[in-house]
Length: 157
Image (cartoon, rainbow, N blue to C red; front, side):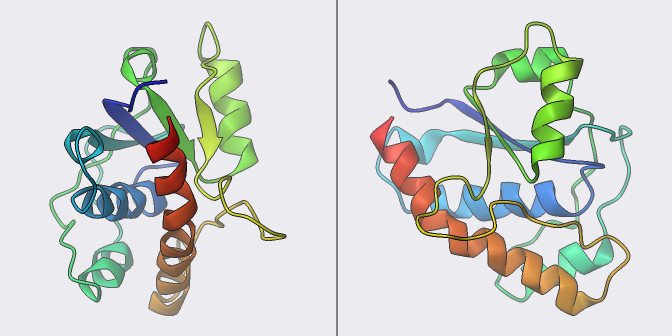
């Protein structure tokens, strides 16, 4: 299977988790060889409105690791975007279920962000919305923890 050209990270409103995941994966792919380095990464939400600002705590949690995402604006996961995506990475099983019900035909390329981790770990990333900065940092760290397995999966495609 060839390397993906478009990866979409998905959460609920596209203002907390998926924009952080987008930035983290985009940054991680910069250290990869081609064609992975050239993958496009975007984010969307299963219940997002177009144009909402990102959560300030998401911005700060990523700023602490040197990534800037303050310009992000939310967008819904549309049929068109899903059809273009080579890989869709969501945060929870409920996101995967909504995608399967809302899109026709249901995409077969939908995985959890933490699905490629080995061992007994929680595969879902909880929503930090409304929580403290520490909650957002914990969410970020759960994503970072999953990057090695996710990158290994991408290399093996």
